[in-house]
Image 1 (spheres, helix red, strand yellow):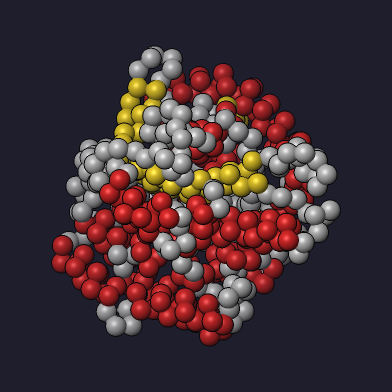
Image 2 (cartoon, one colour):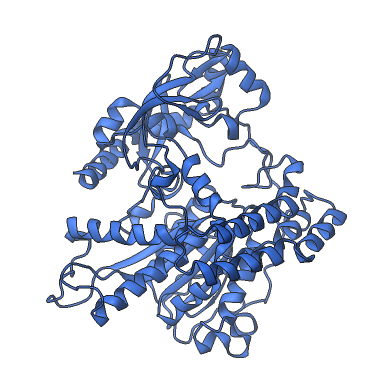
Length: 554
């Protein structure tokens, strides 16, 4: 739902008036270029569930209580919410990316069978191929994307060879994979955490030179991060090649690698008190409003959508399941991505340049590793083509209304492989640069395009031209005013605000904590023009969203 409501979906949740939230059409929603399907997975995330369980959610601690319980004495009103949730059983969800890939394949088989209009040529006796599918993922999707795509292609091959019955399965005609801000391969990307933290294009030094050097040394030391990742992967390949997550010897090694890399490398940034999702902002800054957390828990909205559980923004149960197997470190996904190129699938890596979590420097290094992988087609590997032949070209975004254009980033492209650095965007690129992200998305799925200019191109021979490195320096923007969302206390509220909530001080309006009514009114005054726009877009946005939701859940 993060992608749907905060980034690329047809609608965004907005505040309409006091105690009233609604939706408006998103100007740069990706539905302008394609049908969209958002999947809550693994099960127990978002609106997905295994079994229904009534309980209470403590917003201050993000903990669940079963059965439903009264609020503790002295706790502020409205901080313990009764609702219906999934089982919260870690054994009833996926615990590895490999398992998740199989589940999503089955889900797509069911969805495309139930809604054949989205897969118009599905039968074995029908002419033509199945409708083209474009898989776009984000963040952990750096692992999901390659794993899901490879599994889909393997299942297609199983259908062709007769290992799977064609009568009861469908081809998934994968045409492109887009990975936004992906953490794809930690063995490659891990060293770029201290490098980026110290020397980024914004001139923000979140750590010292000495700390960077020490962190890089920790990565390379005997039995350090690098060695532990290598040991984890070797053991996993030998004892758990299917990625079932049920071999303790593998889980222990991979979990140790994850903790070692986190403690010795990644966590050093936190002392800066800056957001790891946008280094220009404070730790408590939300990349975009969390209004949808309140909106999706309105009874009338849940009834309209036909959902049976209350919405929460992430699942600690699923998180703990994946942590328990060390899934984050298990697999080298660069060969997977290179194999996609060999299968004729377009691959686009997209990174905002203000993100620390999966920063663009590490993403660039992954793109180079993909091009030089033995699994990549010869044209990518020969003569270091991706670096020596393809250079960085401007990502030009044309504004049709005004006739003007701007440079939204820089892109290196060789045939079906591209890497894009998007300027002035953090971890969630479409939220920060919606027009740039939409334009890039539309060019990728169209195929046969120079992603920098949007012009038609013969991808069998095309490459961008320009410098070998992307060196543009950025200006640090001012820090935005932070907002305390009661459904996102840990990530958005200060200690003072948490204490206010505990003591029942302040006022909560549309899911946001204010000192008093006047503070809310003051913020509304600052955004009055935006509120008017939201009111105008409410009717169209709500109608569009409910119509799509009814089709999906019918």
